[in-house]
Every structure is written in C-alpha cells, then in structure tokens.
Image 1: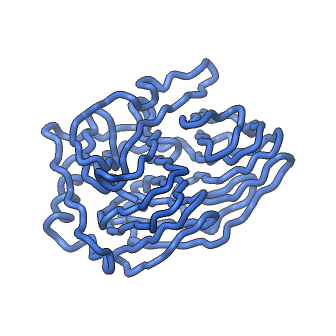
Image 2: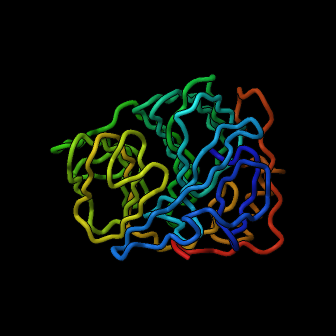
Image 3: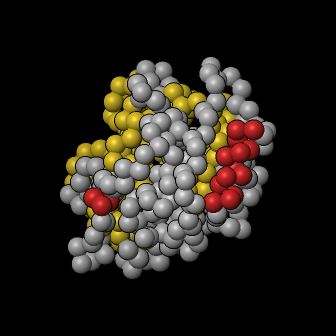
Length: 326
C-alpha cells in the first residue's frame, strides 16, 4: 500500500511517508498528540491521525507512525490501521524504495499486483510481504467488502536497502501459545518461534489473541509497539499505538481481543522518508522521484485498470535525514 493520492511529506516538519489526500500542506499536528510524552516508565501513547486512502471517495486509515516525536519502533517506520468498514480499496500503481511493505488483514480480501508480475490475493491470517529494495511498483484493490487490517513498512538497513525487489506470500505462519494468549508470528522471532518471512534486521511482528490475563515473552533488547485490532484489552486502548522502551522481558495483557505487536532493536541510521520512498538524502529522494516520473527502473504493473500515480512536487526546503526520534 502506498501514497494513493500524492500528498507529499516534508521531512523538516512531519514525516508523512505515505499520504493519500492529494494535499501537500504541512498540517504538522495531531500525531503522537503532538508530544508522545511518556508516563515516567518510558511508555508513550502515540495518537494517530486520519488519512484518506484512495482519493476523494477513499476509506479512512489511522496513521500512528511516523509521528512528530517518534518516527520508528525498531525498523518499523510506518503503521496504518483501517476498519472495520465497508469500503472498496483502490490504490493505483505507485513506487517504493528502501523498505518492505507488510500487509495483514483482520477481515476482507485485497488483490496485490506488482512490477515483478505478481498477482496475489491476501485474506485474514495470511502475510503479503513485498521487499522494495532498489525499486518496485505495485497496486492494491478489493471488491466492496468489510475491510479491516493494517499496513506497515519496515525500513531496510544500509547494507540491504539496494537488494533486488521481491515478493513473498505466506498462507500459514507459526504460532506461540501460552497461558491466556496465542500469538501468530508474522515477522521475526517471538519467544523462540520464528516466522519464515524474510527480515533484514532484528525485529518482531505478531498478532496476539488475548483471552484473560497473560504475559507475552519479548526480547529485552527490543523496543515495542502495541496496537489494538479488536476486542477489549485493558493495557491497549482503541486507536493509539502504545510505545514500550527496551528493557522488559514480558508484556502483560488482560482482556479479550487481538493486539498487534511490533518491535525491534532501535534503528541506528538516519533516514529520509518522503511519499513512498525511504532514502538517505534529499538528492537521493529527488532522483527516485525523477526516475518514477521519467524512467523505467520501477517497472510496470500489468492488469490494473487505471493510470499510475504521479509523484507529488518536492517541498521547497531540502529534506533532512532524521533519526528514530526527534
């Protein structure tokens, strides 16, 4: 999933890596509640903001990363949550560089096409993982249906960000069970259970089904994020992404519902995130944009009924590399 309507992001204000409204204005409020302040334990409540996906008649998504204060959790640099709502997803062909897209559904179905020739539907409990590497383009669409899910990006580290593009579909994934919970390991490793999905840095992504009180084992070297997908879980409210700093070996949860867990070692590199690109400098982003508009390196998505998305205009000020927090 990418910026379906071309709202640009100015790295000098708010890193809107992938906006979809067609409005290139700043509007730098309403992310992390403007602060991301913690409660003395390092825990932060990262409020999202509503962004339309797919143009003027779009479905709404809530974006919690990147934010004003916190831009990343481990290598995870982008989190959109949507639904449940009856809608039609239609995201025309658009490019990506320097990242992996992670598509996870709670309800509905979405059809993925890309410039490698992939045609793959995804349904709940399945993973679509696209590695952009040096460059790829793709589209996503669905019939009118109840859609509920998340779209995430993982930033690729310097050593891997120019890899050949690739796509993986994982119809089944391993599980970790414990008293009061069952976790589907989407990416990385959780409690000694490892997903078959390709990862380029130490991280975890999992859907945790909570039934009562539980403690989910986690890597104390990782920072983590928690997002409620459905139900009621006391420690995770509806809407915001909860940030937890490194240093804990378990996450306690209570209630009945499903929670998305993301995490990883704190990402040590500075990035420029603009539109659908992750790069390292303003000039690199400008080159990516020019190639999408004028070149052929991103390939062609065959079979989508519509034109590719044009890239927005770059901001008047130079984009600055930023670390994981401001």
